[in-house]
Picture 1: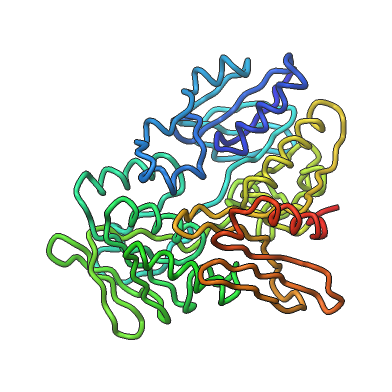
Picture 2: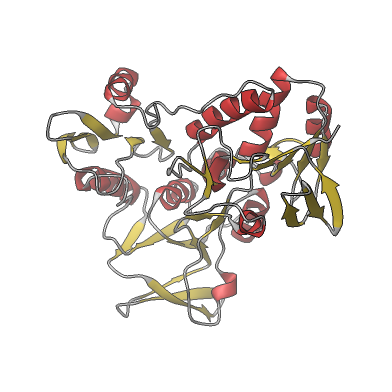
Amino acid sequence: MRPLVILGTGLAGYTLAREFRKLNNERPLIILSQDDGRSYSKPMLSNALAKGKTPDELAMASPEKVAEQLKAEVRVASAVSNIDPVAKTLTVNGESLAYEDLVLAVGADVFRPPLGGDAGDSVLSVNDLGDYAIFREQLGESAKRVLIIGGGLIGCEFANDLAASGHSVTVVEPMGRPLPTLLPERASKAVEAGLQGLGVSFLYGANATAADHAGNGIRVSLADGRHAEADIVLSAIGLRPRLGLAEVAGLNVARGICVDRYLRTSNANIYAIGDCAEVDGKVLMYVLPLMASARALAKTLAGEDTVVSYPAMPVQIKTPICPIVVSPVAPNTEGAWAVEADGNNVKASFLAKDGQLLGFALTGSFASDMKTKMEMARALPPILA
């Protein structure tokens, strides 16, 4: 019997494998990892420092342990160069591997800003445990100056974690406020005030254009002529679904790998899940949609065709200095924000013309109030019914 092959050992790949094994313990299962295959929680990377966790301590299980738990074969350092959907084979490290069903759980790549200067290669990004280990090694034990390019979700989480651990943090955000695509202005100001209280500085209104070596550090230049120096520069300006293998296989792609509600691609035996997948036109790079997808796809792969449904899924942003819970509003949605605020405690509701709640943003005490979060989440329409 040809195996089920899962390509990727991040949260999507391993969660799917665990859900599948709850339903089918006999089908041959091969999981391919391009790195060392350790199981870890990627969301933990942006708050591990203040929790005193080393990169090794974030790893929850070795690939050998996962293989034993899942009655699977986990292959590490596996470079997949080709998919032949007709023959149903993969080329892995130059050798052919046959599959019956294939799941692409290949994640997303960090979007790297185009930087001039001689220090572009020294700009770090954190997208997996290996990246994080390099970042922590450079951070060392003494206080460092860290410049973060990007004031979105990941940038703000790292800013909070680093500043709370004693480092000097500067955030470059061209759009003029933190979390500009997720929060209304009043909620952004609450987050800004919280992070500034930790000592975080913000440089608004211009993109970073160059990074140059300057003494023992790096000098970052902005488009408007301003400069900032740091010991470490971390890029956190977003992710792009990995499409390369899907394109090689001739699968339909757009922003992500296009899949239907069964997580099936344009080829009947190839599926996609997680950050790389575009489900019914939606790319949702959050944990809760991933978990819902894993449960649905596991059933489909076990013989019970199951569509994925996404109820409203608020996102908790890990900025302890100013807790945030947000249910993002899709771009170009018609409506307006209604805001209730008391200092850094903000309750913002995005309402349609008929009064229907379409999204919300909570900061401070509102974000910590379970009753408020649950009531607002229940009032939202589902993302995918």
